[in-house]
Image (cartoon, rainbow, N blue to C red):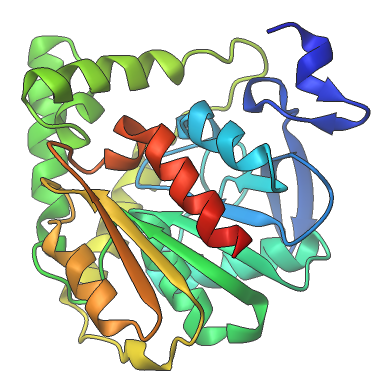
Length: 288
């Protein structure tokens, strides 16, 4: 694809070419990328454990950005954003709200993946008027089954990856079947498509602090999700080891206005493995 297709007027339509910008609020300089049409309600993407701007699958971002303004960002202390990483999901949610308001946005749709989905649940409970619709992927509720084991699994698969010279996400996000292995390789290749102006990786201390926050979330008492009136799309693979898939079923059951999409022979990264299907479902959900 040449650049004339990817930048229409001033509108960037491809994540690969979206410039990294910054905005400062609450003593933090947040790094973010902003693409897609300028009309309608923007979709803010909140990312996973250890992730920076370059960890979003460009097929998912570009798919959303074909119809919606999409904003991705590094939360406090992560990647190119300043400050130190909070050790609770609640504090991360507060920072996210600070970032959203700094952009002058009064209402957003949120797509939270994994840890991002935990942050999104807190935002919608604390600031309901800020959120129109919610997409929760590869995630689970506070106190959800198996969430407290994320630390152990992450350490285990990081060691497995080092020993086999692979990316830990190959083990953490995808099944070990032929399909899963292939999907993992394709996903990891897509993450390298952007060659210019790449983000800094997360620091080891920020990563460990995020793990602590997720662990605490897994030990919390369940929240009352019945107060969340917004429409919610919940999606995951059927074999998520990181945030066990039954958490997605649990979320969909406990939220008053939720629909559930589960992908076969797919793990934590099910929405990346089935990006075509996920984008189609998400656009239909947001456009309703």
